[in-house]
Picture (cartoon, rainbow, N blue to C red):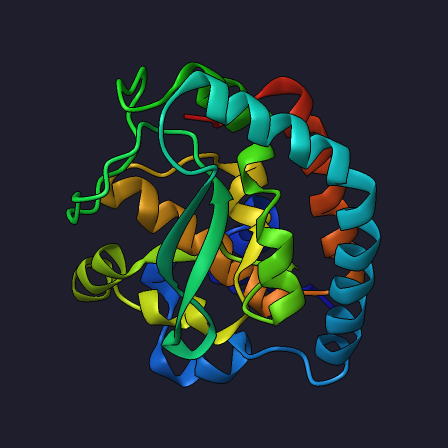
Length: 229
């Protein structure tokens, strides 16, 4: 009559993470999109983006003008990212750094990064630089909620260094996600490993109520600036 729990399940429920050390390839199916919730999630994504874009259009105009007045270069930053199934797509963001058209090496943002503009610091702290990704949601490249899409160079590096990293690409990437509201910005291999454990938890337990919790925590983060760089 005594309940017995596997230590991996106990850690998972208490931390909101799935420890990589406890994973095996036999658990591959655990991280696929839910067959019932996934189509519902897509409808929510479309409705959310279609409602948000007209409402936020004045904000888009103000941010665009501020970027143009603050520094030279385009308003939008467009970059190749890796999405669901390992497919590459172009992600849209408001430009928050100085324009560097010939830079090819992938770099994490640093604390007090000199590349970040004055306007960039504000919109990054408030996560406003992510708003153009609503167009990616409409296109179907992204969801409102999911693992953050990463640059190809980083993906190739982490797939070699971190076990099961490829599993995060079984679900559609998102504008915000479980890792973002719990951990913040990941800027090294160790923090990326921790971020992956949160992403895998989301992929395994994705549900309407978990998405609602992420939205509520995202609003708190926008107000506090948690994890921004």
